[in-house]
Length: 156
Image (cartoon, rainbow, N blue to C red; front, side, top):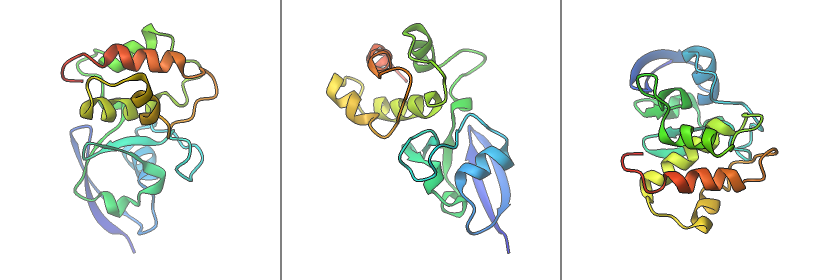
């Protein structure tokens, strides 16, 4: 038997009926239709499914959809505004921090949640903040450079 949930995803309201065991990752991808949130390990180890929920980076593969009832959710699709890339998205492109791109949405959202809390981080703090996001392509140096470049921008 389904349960009604109310989600606010990228400033849009959704009233959905979900099964008790349904993951937030699946609801975002299959019911809301936002596929930027990637399925990776399904165990919370890779970070490909990272979203921001009520201001905190979370692995959507570890959250039941019913636990997200009434919460505000930001996905990678919600970062750009009026056709303009978010500064983090722009920096990832500018610094070559994107290769295959599979980890990029989760990496960017983890970085955004972190920079919202710490606008002047050290390299070590950045490394720690993205430790839950795995990337097989870049070697992390360019990702860290891109995040550091955004650190002093206002309203990230």
